[in-house]
Length: 168
Image 1 (cartoon, rainbow, N blue to C red):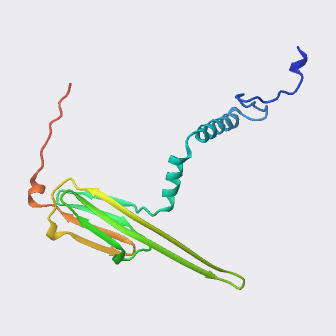
Image 2: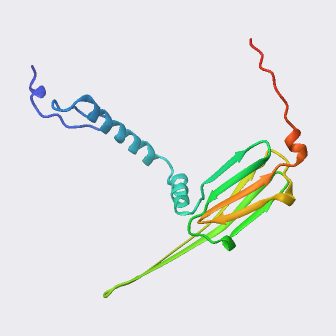
Image 3: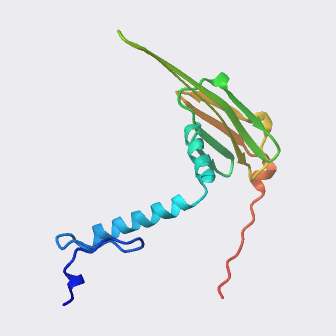
């Protein structure tokens, strides 16, 4: 045994964390992985991640698209919005839903007055895989949920082609 083995070891840069006897291997592994990931993300340029963080504050509605033989149904969750704040346009091969959400809250107490304003615009483009009968398109808005029914044209309803699967 050497004298250096009796001295407390100083952690050097790049050393893997030492495991304490009362811990299992998993907490030490977790700390080491956290350290490596922190170092990795700190070394990258901040701009791409800053752009993602800035987007988190914007409003992006959840959209559900369902297709049957007769229609395409689009449902969008737009809480806190009115129907006059929503713009829907239909082109030959896509549906576009745009809007701007404005929210303002005021709170006043004995010793304070607080106003918070949040604004966020969104635009979602949904590609349509079938021709739509534009004269029968129906959009309804109820309790923050927008439902758009896009009936397929008669020609699009009949355009089904069966593809045979071959074994190799």
